[in-house]
Length: 401
Image (cartoon, rainbow, N blue to C red):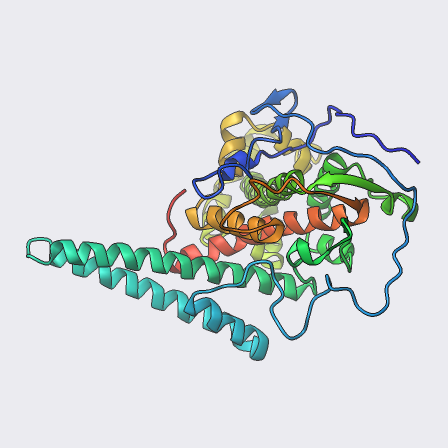
């Protein structure tokens, strides 16, 4: 069975990890993807996989559980929170899950109060001899709080994964044996269960684009193998995180615009949808929608809307209509904390956070099933990151990216 990685022009998103490039990782996030819509390209790209099928079907015999499977005795995530707030939430997560969100809210409030108090002392002492000292204290407190908040955001994402019973893939070094990478369990169904049909359709297309595995592929296809450089796989993972983040932002924008366009006599439809899916709207947008929806009567009466005109546009078609500015606005990470979190998690997963993947040119043999598992996890991570960022920012003001 032969597979090729020939580049094909399709109407799909390809995100560039250059969007998360920073001083911490000068080499891992090099532009390896193109953002394309209907012939428009925002960045150049080249091939990012070197695929060679060694075996049509590989069966792995295992005695006992795999070292890549989660352990019940530890958090078993690539990145271990190191701040006091992060370690506290680990304990709550493992021992008192029912109190987890209460603990998160308390920690965020405490951090916000600590930072505000340090800033207030800095301003109050601006004319005194201790002005420089309090300015330095405020800077240190800001840095300390940022690290703690990033740990809190990471724990919130882990909690979201736990709700769908999906453990994060641990450090890939634990999943590689004799240069063979395999990830158990696959958890494809659970990772796909959190999306609407329209979003899932685009995610499956993304998976097909980056790894070449169709949604209806056979077991034989899934277990076909390919050689992949870990550095390139890191590019794919980071880009898929951004893709999940973008899809969450774009789908919410799509829902909001649809509600604003609903004619007056169908306002109960929009309201019912919002009541059924409250999590699909960011904090504060529900009032915005309900406040403007009653002003759409003139639109419906002036245009004489028909049932055909009221037909909801598919998400894919809606996104394809984005201009470059709207595309960048939806894709851009809103906070520095989200940027740092993607960097830290990706480097912890694929290598060493301090050294990144600068010198990690290791080539591993893996199955398309394992590739699909990684890409689906990355997309879910980006989607959960959007939700987490929105919530945390409502309590603790994040740094604008």
